[in-house]
Length: 310
Ligand SMILES: Nc1nc2c(ncn2[C@@H]2O[C@H](COP(=O)(O)OP(=O)(O)OP(=O)(O)O)[C@@H](O)[C@H]2O)c(=O)[nH]1
Image (tube, rainbow, N blue to C red):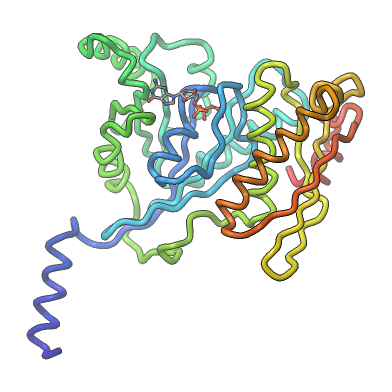
């Protein structure tokens, strides 16, 4: 390639992108069930964060990476802001949220197209006016008359100095490009931190636990106590086979039968579906063993939480 060819090629690439390369962190917050995980999944184009109708399924901080020609977005998915049960676990969660919000470059505050409620307001109180914050009005597809959105936006806009307001539908992938463009405005100019094919910095051990937890929430729905946890006790790689041993931890003996089911059928279903997802995600065979363990009052025991990695 001659110098001229090279120069032309560089110019062509520059013409495709919108200026210098940018890379930075983005936190997604909002009351439970507004669609934070769905938004992340649809931006990443792959199911990594877990979603469920049940509130508070995203307990861990999860980093998703989306790289385009000119931007690398590092998404930090924060846990749902839990208000009902303020035990040690939830106090820890709320601290994480506040901490994350001061550390990131941009915050997405996600709402549903409804009037400002107490639960939204509690999350609003956590926002810092030092971090650029975009008001993301999700579930636009549920709104019949799009004109109704204006009074709602005004309500929210009065309560916090939002940098921008972007209506989207995470589920239908509507207006997500616009949202990414808005986010880019607030990211610092710097090289990409991660290589393009890295989707998450969480290891397979973490993802295995997430998948088991997702199946529990999906298959048991509202029956399941919010304090259920999944701990990977052993993770072995033998040639191409991954051997994973997972304990499902509940608070009380009485919660065990719910998870195990008649003749162990529930637990079997949870394990089978989680194993199938793991095989897809890891791209290889998985042997998965799960069992239910009772850890009395663990949700209230700060030390126990520490040992579980919270
Ligand atoms: N109609 C519609 N439903 C959506 C949209 N986005 C998310 N949902 C649904 O809303 C529900 C909650 O979505 P999640 O992504 O789990 O919500 P979340 O905010 O991450 O919830 P937590 O983890 O509990 O904080 C799910 O049933 C989604 O399918 C959307 O754009 N339109």
